[in-house]
Image (cartoon, rainbow, N blue to C red; front, side, top):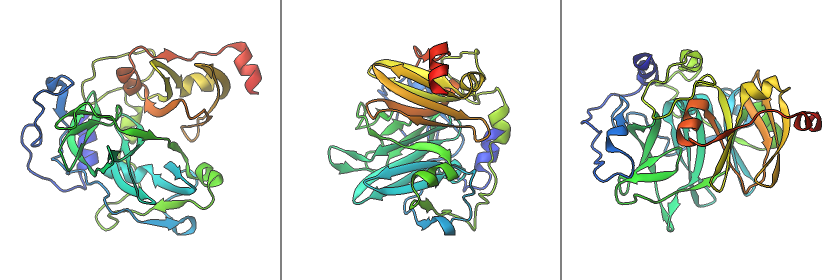
Length: 312
Protein backbone atom coordinates (compact mmCIF):
# COMPACT_ATOMS: atom_id res chain seq x y z
CA UNK A 1 0.00 0.00 0.00
CA UNK A 2 2.83 2.40 0.80
CA UNK A 3 4.27 2.00 -2.70
CA UNK A 4 0.81 2.36 -4.24
CA UNK A 5 0.06 5.61 -2.43
CA UNK A 6 3.40 7.12 -3.33
CA UNK A 7 3.17 5.97 -6.92
CA UNK A 8 -0.30 7.45 -7.37
CA UNK A 9 0.63 10.71 -5.71
CA UNK A 10 3.81 11.41 -7.61
CA UNK A 11 3.18 9.79 -10.98
CA UNK A 12 2.43 13.13 -12.62
CA UNK A 13 5.05 15.17 -10.80
CA UNK A 14 8.66 15.84 -11.80
CA UNK A 15 11.33 13.61 -10.35
CA UNK A 16 14.44 14.95 -8.71
CA UNK A 17 17.58 13.80 -7.05
CA UNK A 18 17.50 13.62 -3.30
CA UNK A 19 20.01 12.71 -0.65
CA UNK A 20 19.10 10.73 2.44
CA UNK A 21 16.98 13.50 3.93
CA UNK A 22 16.48 15.65 0.84
CA UNK A 23 19.34 17.96 1.75
CA UNK A 24 17.93 18.97 5.14
CA UNK A 25 19.95 18.64 8.31
CA UNK A 26 18.00 17.27 11.28
CA UNK A 27 20.87 17.46 13.78
CA UNK A 28 19.50 18.70 17.08
CA UNK A 29 15.86 18.45 15.94
CA UNK A 30 13.23 18.78 18.65
CA UNK A 31 11.69 15.47 17.55
CA UNK A 32 13.62 12.19 17.23
CA UNK A 33 15.74 12.49 14.11
CA UNK A 34 15.16 8.81 13.38
CA UNK A 35 11.41 9.48 13.17
CA UNK A 36 11.88 11.97 10.32
CA UNK A 37 11.54 9.92 7.15
CA UNK A 38 11.96 10.49 3.44
CA UNK A 39 8.54 10.12 1.88
CA UNK A 40 9.65 9.48 -1.69
CA UNK A 41 9.80 12.79 -3.58
CA UNK A 42 12.72 15.17 -3.58
CA UNK A 43 12.53 18.58 -1.98
CA UNK A 44 9.93 20.49 -4.02
CA UNK A 45 9.11 17.30 -5.94
CA UNK A 46 5.59 18.20 -4.80
CA UNK A 47 5.28 21.70 -6.19
CA UNK A 48 3.80 24.34 -3.95
CA UNK A 49 1.53 26.94 -5.53
CA UNK A 50 3.49 30.17 -5.23
CA UNK A 51 1.46 32.46 -7.48
CA UNK A 52 -2.14 31.35 -6.94
CA UNK A 53 -4.82 32.62 -9.28
CA UNK A 54 -8.52 32.73 -8.49
CA UNK A 55 -11.73 32.94 -10.48
CA UNK A 56 -15.37 33.53 -9.65
CA UNK A 57 -17.81 30.75 -8.90
CA UNK A 58 -19.28 30.58 -12.40
CA UNK A 59 -15.88 30.13 -14.04
CA UNK A 60 -14.70 27.42 -11.64
CA UNK A 61 -15.95 24.45 -13.66
CA UNK A 62 -13.56 22.12 -11.76
CA UNK A 63 -15.47 22.74 -8.51
CA UNK A 64 -18.81 20.89 -8.47
CA UNK A 65 -21.34 21.23 -5.67
CA UNK A 66 -19.96 18.19 -3.87
CA UNK A 67 -16.30 19.07 -4.35
CA UNK A 68 -14.53 19.28 -1.02
CA UNK A 69 -12.87 22.64 -0.54
CA UNK A 70 -10.81 24.32 2.13
CA UNK A 71 -12.57 27.60 2.80
CA UNK A 72 -10.78 30.65 4.17
CA UNK A 73 -12.26 34.08 4.87
CA UNK A 74 -10.23 37.06 6.07
CA UNK A 75 -11.78 40.52 6.42
CA UNK A 76 -14.56 39.70 3.99
CA UNK A 77 -12.31 38.13 1.36
CA UNK A 78 -13.44 34.51 0.92
CA UNK A 79 -11.48 31.94 -1.05
CA UNK A 80 -12.02 28.25 -1.76
CA UNK A 81 -9.13 25.85 -2.33
CA UNK A 82 -10.42 22.59 -3.85
CA UNK A 83 -8.98 19.63 -1.99
CA UNK A 84 -8.38 17.63 -5.18
CA UNK A 85 -5.99 20.36 -6.32
CA UNK A 86 -4.15 20.48 -3.02
CA UNK A 87 -3.70 16.71 -3.06
CA UNK A 88 -1.10 17.39 -5.77
CA UNK A 89 0.45 20.55 -4.31
CA UNK A 90 -0.09 20.49 -0.52
CA UNK A 91 1.04 24.11 -0.04
CA UNK A 92 -0.40 27.36 -1.37
CA UNK A 93 1.56 30.52 -0.60
CA UNK A 94 -1.13 33.18 -0.70
CA UNK A 95 -1.75 36.75 0.41
CA UNK A 96 -4.82 38.53 1.75
CA UNK A 97 -4.56 42.33 1.54
CA UNK A 98 -0.84 42.20 2.11
CA UNK A 99 -1.00 39.52 4.80
CA UNK A 100 0.99 36.42 3.81
CA UNK A 101 -0.93 33.20 4.43
CA UNK A 102 0.04 29.60 3.78
CA UNK A 103 -2.76 27.11 3.12
CA UNK A 104 -1.71 23.49 3.58
CA UNK A 105 -3.26 20.08 3.05
CA UNK A 106 -1.82 16.68 3.89
CA UNK A 107 -3.65 13.94 1.96
CA UNK A 108 -2.09 11.20 4.08
CA UNK A 109 -3.14 12.66 7.45
CA UNK A 110 -6.30 14.26 6.04
CA UNK A 111 -5.42 17.64 7.58
CA UNK A 112 -6.29 21.03 6.03
CA UNK A 113 -4.59 23.82 8.02
CA UNK A 114 -3.96 27.50 7.25
CA UNK A 115 -1.35 29.67 8.95
CA UNK A 116 -0.28 33.28 9.15
CA UNK A 117 3.00 33.04 7.23
CA UNK A 118 4.80 35.66 9.31
CA UNK A 119 7.26 35.15 12.13
CA UNK A 120 8.18 38.28 14.10
CA UNK A 121 6.94 40.35 11.18
CA UNK A 122 9.05 38.45 8.65
CA UNK A 123 7.05 36.96 5.76
CA UNK A 124 7.93 33.36 4.99
CA UNK A 125 7.40 31.31 1.87
CA UNK A 126 6.98 27.58 2.24
CA UNK A 127 7.67 24.50 0.18
CA UNK A 128 7.21 20.75 0.58
CA UNK A 129 10.32 19.07 1.97
CA UNK A 130 9.44 15.52 0.90
CA UNK A 131 9.96 14.46 4.52
CA UNK A 132 7.46 13.21 7.08
CA UNK A 133 7.18 12.98 10.83
CA UNK A 134 4.50 10.70 12.30
CA UNK A 135 3.06 10.14 8.80
CA UNK A 136 2.44 13.89 8.45
CA UNK A 137 4.36 16.04 6.02
CA UNK A 138 7.03 18.55 6.94
CA UNK A 139 6.99 21.95 5.30
CA UNK A 140 10.13 24.01 5.04
CA UNK A 141 10.54 27.75 4.79
CA UNK A 142 12.74 28.78 1.91
CA UNK A 143 14.54 31.49 3.86
CA UNK A 144 16.03 29.50 6.73
CA UNK A 145 15.31 25.97 5.46
CA UNK A 146 13.83 25.08 8.82
CA UNK A 147 11.49 22.09 8.84
CA UNK A 148 7.94 22.61 10.16
CA UNK A 149 5.42 20.02 11.30
CA UNK A 150 2.16 20.72 9.46
CA UNK A 151 -0.10 19.40 12.21
CA UNK A 152 1.78 21.17 14.99
CA UNK A 153 2.58 24.34 13.06
CA UNK A 154 5.96 24.10 14.77
CA UNK A 155 9.50 24.34 13.45
CA UNK A 156 11.20 21.12 14.53
CA UNK A 157 14.67 21.77 13.10
CA UNK A 158 16.78 24.55 11.66
CA UNK A 159 17.32 28.18 12.69
CA UNK A 160 13.63 28.70 13.54
CA UNK A 161 13.34 25.55 15.65
CA UNK A 162 10.80 26.02 18.44
CA UNK A 163 8.90 28.76 16.59
CA UNK A 164 5.18 28.22 16.14
CA UNK A 165 3.00 29.61 13.36
CA UNK A 166 -0.34 31.22 14.20
CA UNK A 167 -3.28 29.19 12.96
CA UNK A 168 -5.95 30.85 10.83
CA UNK A 169 -9.36 29.25 11.04
CA UNK A 170 -10.49 27.42 7.93
CA UNK A 171 -13.23 24.94 7.05
CA UNK A 172 -13.26 21.82 4.93
CA UNK A 173 -16.69 21.22 3.44
CA UNK A 174 -18.59 20.70 0.21
CA UNK A 175 -18.30 23.62 -2.19
CA UNK A 176 -22.07 24.13 -2.21
CA UNK A 177 -21.99 24.63 1.57
CA UNK A 178 -19.04 27.04 1.46
CA UNK A 179 -20.68 28.92 -1.42
CA UNK A 180 -23.84 29.30 0.63
CA UNK A 181 -21.78 30.82 3.45
CA UNK A 182 -19.84 33.07 1.09
CA UNK A 183 -21.63 33.66 -2.25
CA UNK A 184 -18.85 35.99 -3.42
CA UNK A 185 -16.09 33.46 -2.82
CA UNK A 186 -13.35 33.05 -5.35
CA UNK A 187 -11.92 29.66 -6.27
CA UNK A 188 -8.32 28.56 -6.74
CA UNK A 189 -7.51 27.90 -10.39
CA UNK A 190 -5.88 24.65 -11.42
CA UNK A 191 -2.15 25.42 -11.15
CA UNK A 192 -0.85 23.03 -13.85
CA UNK A 193 -3.84 21.95 -15.98
CA UNK A 194 -1.68 20.99 -18.96
CA UNK A 195 0.50 18.69 -16.88
CA UNK A 196 -1.80 17.23 -14.25
CA UNK A 197 -5.23 15.67 -14.66
CA UNK A 198 -6.96 16.97 -11.53
CA UNK A 199 -10.34 15.43 -12.31
CA UNK A 200 -9.98 12.41 -10.06
CA UNK A 201 -8.52 11.88 -6.63
CA UNK A 202 -5.51 9.57 -6.41
CA UNK A 203 -6.49 8.47 -2.93
CA UNK A 204 -9.70 6.41 -3.24
CA UNK A 205 -8.00 3.15 -2.32
CA UNK A 206 -6.06 4.82 0.47
CA UNK A 207 -9.22 6.21 2.12
CA UNK A 208 -10.78 2.78 2.56
CA UNK A 209 -7.60 0.91 3.43
CA UNK A 210 -6.78 0.39 7.10
CA UNK A 211 -3.09 0.77 6.29
CA UNK A 212 -1.06 3.80 7.39
CA UNK A 213 1.80 3.97 4.87
CA UNK A 214 4.45 5.38 7.21
CA UNK A 215 5.22 4.55 10.85
CA UNK A 216 3.42 6.31 13.69
CA UNK A 217 4.24 6.00 17.37
CA UNK A 218 0.62 5.61 18.52
CA UNK A 219 -2.09 3.28 17.24
CA UNK A 220 -5.64 3.10 18.51
CA UNK A 221 -7.73 0.47 16.73
CA UNK A 222 -11.06 1.40 18.27
CA UNK A 223 -11.86 3.15 14.98
CA UNK A 224 -10.81 2.88 11.34
CA UNK A 225 -7.50 4.76 10.91
CA UNK A 226 -9.06 6.98 8.21
CA UNK A 227 -12.27 7.72 10.13
CA UNK A 228 -12.95 11.44 9.88
CA UNK A 229 -12.36 13.46 13.02
CA UNK A 230 -13.25 16.99 13.96
CA UNK A 231 -10.70 17.65 16.67
CA UNK A 232 -10.94 20.53 19.13
CA UNK A 233 -8.30 21.90 21.50
CA UNK A 234 -8.49 24.43 24.31
CA UNK A 235 -5.46 24.83 26.52
CA UNK A 236 -4.03 21.36 27.11
CA UNK A 237 -7.32 19.53 26.56
CA UNK A 238 -8.26 17.83 23.30
CA UNK A 239 -11.45 16.09 22.22
CA UNK A 240 -12.25 14.09 19.08
CA UNK A 241 -15.66 14.02 17.40
CA UNK A 242 -15.60 11.08 15.01
CA UNK A 243 -17.80 10.95 11.94
CA UNK A 244 -19.02 7.38 12.54
CA UNK A 245 -19.83 8.12 16.20
CA UNK A 246 -21.82 11.23 15.28
CA UNK A 247 -23.59 9.30 12.52
CA UNK A 248 -24.68 6.60 14.96
CA UNK A 249 -25.94 9.36 17.27
CA UNK A 250 -28.10 10.93 14.57
CA UNK A 251 -25.58 13.18 12.87
CA UNK A 252 -26.09 16.39 14.87
CA UNK A 253 -25.07 17.16 18.44
CA UNK A 254 -24.71 19.97 20.95
CA UNK A 255 -21.87 19.72 23.43
CA UNK A 256 -19.89 21.77 25.93
CA UNK A 257 -16.12 21.94 25.75
CA UNK A 258 -14.06 23.83 28.31
CA UNK A 259 -16.99 26.07 29.18
CA UNK A 260 -17.99 26.73 25.57
CA UNK A 261 -21.17 25.55 23.87
CA UNK A 262 -20.52 23.98 20.48
CA UNK A 263 -22.66 22.48 17.72
CA UNK A 264 -21.37 19.86 15.30
CA UNK A 265 -22.98 17.96 12.45
CA UNK A 266 -21.57 15.26 10.21
CA UNK A 267 -22.73 14.65 6.63
CA UNK A 268 -22.07 11.04 5.67
CA UNK A 269 -22.62 11.61 1.95
CA UNK A 270 -20.15 14.49 1.85
CA UNK A 271 -17.83 12.98 4.49
CA UNK A 272 -17.52 16.40 6.10
CA UNK A 273 -18.35 18.26 9.28
CA UNK A 274 -20.19 21.52 9.82
CA UNK A 275 -19.90 23.32 13.11
CA UNK A 276 -20.44 26.36 15.25
CA UNK A 277 -17.46 26.68 17.58
CA UNK A 278 -16.15 29.82 19.33
CA UNK A 279 -12.88 31.31 18.12
CA UNK A 280 -11.20 30.48 21.43
CA UNK A 281 -11.18 26.82 20.44
CA UNK A 282 -8.78 25.42 17.85
CA UNK A 283 -10.53 23.21 15.28
CA UNK A 284 -8.87 20.61 13.04
CA UNK A 285 -10.15 18.11 10.49
CA UNK A 286 -8.01 14.96 10.45
CA UNK A 287 -8.01 11.23 10.06
CA UNK A 288 -8.32 9.34 13.33
CA UNK A 289 -4.79 7.90 13.25
CA UNK A 290 -3.24 11.35 12.79
CA UNK A 291 -5.35 13.04 15.45
CA UNK A 292 -4.60 10.30 17.99
CA UNK A 293 -0.88 10.32 17.18
CA UNK A 294 -0.52 14.06 17.77
CA UNK A 295 -3.05 14.20 20.66
CA UNK A 296 -2.30 11.07 22.64
CA UNK A 297 -4.51 12.03 25.59
CA UNK A 298 -7.47 13.09 23.49
CA UNK A 299 -10.97 12.44 24.76
CA UNK A 300 -13.38 10.75 22.37
CA UNK A 301 -16.89 12.17 22.40
CA UNK A 302 -19.62 9.65 23.09
CA UNK A 303 -23.34 10.50 23.04
CA UNK A 304 -25.46 11.36 26.03
CA UNK A 305 -29.26 11.59 25.84
CA UNK A 306 -29.52 15.29 26.67
CA UNK A 307 -27.06 16.24 23.92
CA UNK A 308 -29.03 14.35 21.29
CA UNK A 309 -32.40 15.74 22.36
CA UNK A 310 -31.11 19.29 22.40
CA UNK A 311 -29.61 18.92 18.96
CA UNK A 312 -32.84 17.89 17.29
